[in-house]
Amino acid sequence: MLNKQRLLTPGPTPLPEDVRLAMAQDMIHHRKPEFKKIMANVQAGLQHLFGTTQPVLSLTSSGTGAMTAAVTNIVKPGDTVLVIEGGKFGERWSDIAKKHDLEMIILPVAWGSAAKVIDVLNSLDRWQEKIKGVLIQASETSTGVLHLIKEIAEITRKRDVLMVVDGISAVGISPCPMDEWGIDCLLTGSQKGLMLPPGLSFISLSERAWDQVRKVKPKNFYFDLLKERDKILDDQTLFTPAISLIVGLEQSLKHFEGDKLEQIFRKQWALTAMARTGITALGLELLAMENFTWGLTSLLIPPGIDASDIIDIMAKDYGIVAAGGQGRMKGKMIRLGHMGHIDWSDLLAGIYALRQAFVACGGHTGCKDYMEQAMNAYTQTLAEGRPV
Ligand SMILES: Cc1ncc(COP(=O)(O)O)c(C=O)c1O
Image (cartoon, rainbow, N blue to C red; front, top):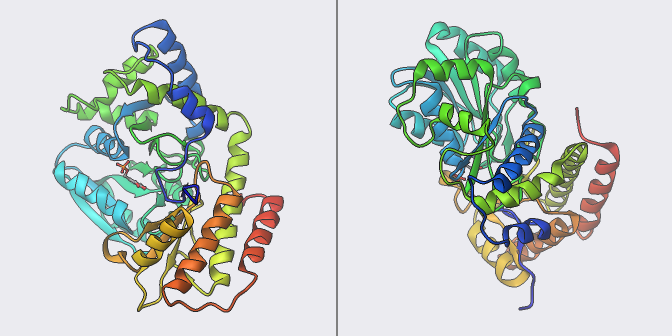
């Protein structure tokens, strides 16, 4: 094999060696002290990651499982929610809400933009008593947009409205401190910032969200969050968990301990600056211009060139696995992931492969020092630190 494969997708992400080795161990039993000890460590690590004193529940499912658990536990059929729909995952909130027979007020947001705080405020004012919760992404992975969670939570925390945040491509990538920002439900999946295989999801609820769950009395047998909460207080899960993934999780959480979390945010911010600088130096257009995600960069491919051809060449000739556009953006954009166990050299390889593949597909770029520009942006941004 000529090339090492580099997974520059917005999840799943590459796995650090210590995490892989931890998961290669033989099976243990999930009701025995050995597992409970692991779960206790995992709980402390997840609370630090989520920035909460509330329990963080580990569910055996992909991220959508935690989204489903949030909807089915926090609101009951007939309740009204405000859905922020600015991409494929905003649409997923709507799909889940629809299945659960919720009334929806949809706030459409142009792909590539973040929801305007004033629009959220106006929607909440207009439908006042009706709206029980806001369903939103912290990071909309399909567009590479970072929604203004802190600012929107400033509004919801003062009202009787629960702020439900899908942090699947944000937690462990960019700051999203649940308690400090006043988020009522924060959830994520294992396969992105956490550097684990897919298969686990995590969810935590504020005290007022738990009060709501007690009122709703959810009917589902799996994803019964009150029962999961009772179990986690005894360092267990309700059913047989994905034990090997939990063992890997204990290891991966060590990468976020103490101020390592802050260092990861700085690295993510610097990688974002690096990707954006390199891509614009090539003359390519970015989709998210103002509020952009720290774990992926979305770029538009000029008409006449199919983004899938570029992605194929990047993989075949350079070992770089990037992602394409989703839904209406299929063939028109590339999403270059730089989350999790990715460093500057992986991303530099990614930017180089992007340039080569773009030119091979007929694209034009006159820039010769795009790699140098990208590297300078990385080192400078790393030295400056992340925005507060
Ligand atoms: C923001 C966001 N929400 C939801 C999902 C769905 O997660 P899963 O595919 O793990 O169910 C993803 C996955 O890419 C995501 O990025």
